[in-house]
Image 1 (tube, rainbow, N blue to C red):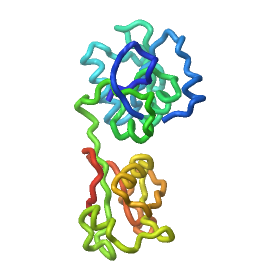
Image 2 (cartoon, rainbow, N blue to C red):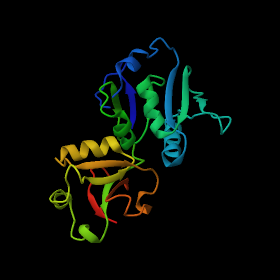
Image 3 (cartoon, rainbow, N blue to C red):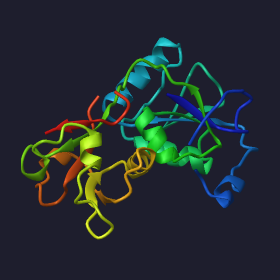
Amino acid sequence: MFSCRKNTLSVQCGGDGNVSEDVAADQDLSRSITRIAIPSKGRMAEDTQDLLADCQLKVRKLNPRQYIAKMPSLDGVEVWFQRASDVMRRLRAGDVDIGIVGNDMFVEFGAGDPDLIVLHDKLGFGHCHLALGVPNGGKFANINNIDELKAMPQWTAKNPLKVVTGYHYVAREYFKKIGMEHVQLLNADGALEALPQSVAKLLQEPDGGHDPAIEQT
């Protein structure tokens, strides 16, 4: 999706995403160059550059190692190549004016910031689905949906459900929404399904859609 920060562009749109007041106040709104941040690697990076090229906004990157490039068709525009999570961090800090990222990155690293605005959310690529997965056996053998998981009597303040995820904001908001109180979120990146079951009772990872759902691994 295309996203930006309020007051950086002369556009009107509606949005979401959280930044401290001192960071927002430090934005350089007098900067004349417009900065666009896009993913630097992976499927999103390739699809984003293809989209821009199709719009006659081809990015000119002379050195594959450089992190700042130009758009020959537009004067006064810089393209910053960043990790997807850093695209959002740069947006929130006011270092860039427009970012192109997936909705999962926007929600997770935007964290409800009211100053972030979605300009366009139907790019047609980079689809992502967040799923909750439980072990096949043991106490979870007959758990097939989130209601059955919530109804398990084991979860207390002293014995919370442990969830390994790289999406803490998304997970926290989701469990709050469904009224599941006793949950402990643990940090992890990469292939979460490869973690031993002793590390976590529940896994949350991207897999392809929108709303989280229970899936057996």
